[in-house]
Image 1 (cartoon, rainbow over the protein chains, first blue to last red):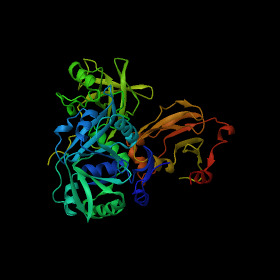
Image 2 (image 1 turned 90 degrees about the horizontal axis):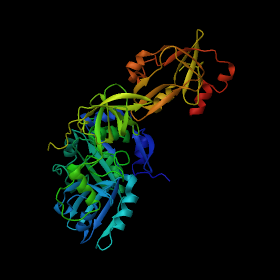
Image 3 (image 1 turned 45 degrees about the vertical axis):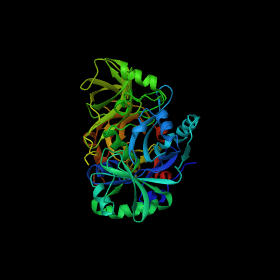
Length: 366
Length: 124
């Protein structure tokens, strides 16, 4: 049974093309993916991302418990701050990538991927033995709206949000008399917020933001543009770029891993060994050197030898070329600037390894 | 769309003109694909059998193969859409054909092609 968000009827009324995604009937585009993409880069867009999971961890052992299930330093997280985390298994493989918010002492909010909520909860419950806390799945009670783009701050100011939280912070606030959690996060590389609201108020909030956003040329944005936006920002997509057989180090997420975490956590031995000795496979970003488009699953070649595969690929409306992410064997002679090949319909096409992100992120200038 | 064209269930069309055939994809297919960003057409003089993939079209989301409604030999390709794939999404642009072919196909190859009116019913 495909699930629907509380905004489902709104999407239909807006003429959205709907697709099944992670068990949800979601809008993939309203007008054109490229137009929607440009709207978020130049103005402001609003996304229904209510399929995402919300899990509350509450209780006196919440902090040491979270510290055991992710490599990040949860004990260093202060009230109303967030951190990007990975839920790791015993081998350091990524069960899910998460944002963890500290709402107050002994209470944390986890935003999880829709496709992984069940696996996350299973793993969390299995790791709970000996800890005094509650794991509460609130996913069915909350809707999540993302407002993203360079004009998002101006729009939010207009609806009365004068003191937005700073980057990767969250706060309790009120819009149109509705209580919300508002966080300065997103999945586009642009400045913006994500607004967590009780389901019964989501339609009202959606309509109001679209109404007030008119003068900023706001558009509703589907999952299609969400994917092209996150790819340009080189943000990983779970299931494509991350999975249970890939560690955060292999995934190019070393920046998110504390180097001297004293507390034990799942996968610590392997993760620390990889930090010290290096990895056998690694994530790269590349651009195609012709007009062809790399797609998820295509093989990557170097010197006529298969060295890996593409995990995400597509067009970059902002750059005007075609880009991708993939995993390759960690060969010494391959780095930024090297030419590799992508096998597309039985022909090899040249691509160049380039720096990630693929665009200059504009979400931290505040 | 021309009323005298024949269509496939995979949304290609075939239109006879001066002993040649024009092949493309239907407006419905274009609308379903969304933003078209890449088109690969075959070389002139390439021969294809019926139902063989002769072209690839990529939208932002995915790549799709385009199949021959009947067998034939490519005599002309639409370079303009190869160089500007976004023209296919332009409602004011009319030159949306992909290739022109000559064909010796017998009636059997036409048996499963749909009249445009039947095709329209099929997609509704």
